[in-house]
Image 1: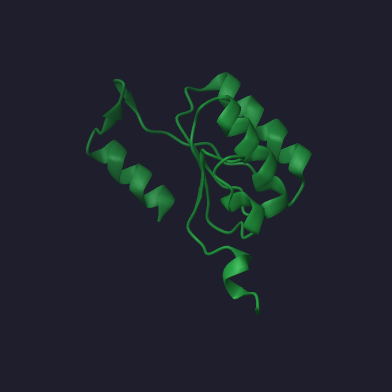
Image 2: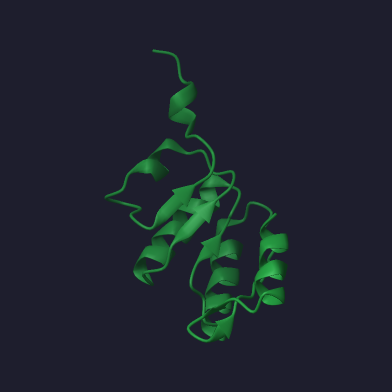
Length: 106
């Protein structure tokens, strides 16, 4: 769906600050340092306005902290670590799935 939305945005000439919306992908395989490296490279070489991913919570905590330091939003489609819900620590982090805390027994 994400890629389809980007393709449609380009077909309809939707721009942000005069630029077409693009994307870069990286396979990180759960390696938090590799995820950070890929993210840093993308931010250096492009006008990044947001980060979609990563899938793993162990990567998401590092990427969310990095995104906050650069004042850009990060959203994960699979990270479920409850600590990522702390808005004081991760104010620029969002997710599309429920935290694991929602599934714990009292």
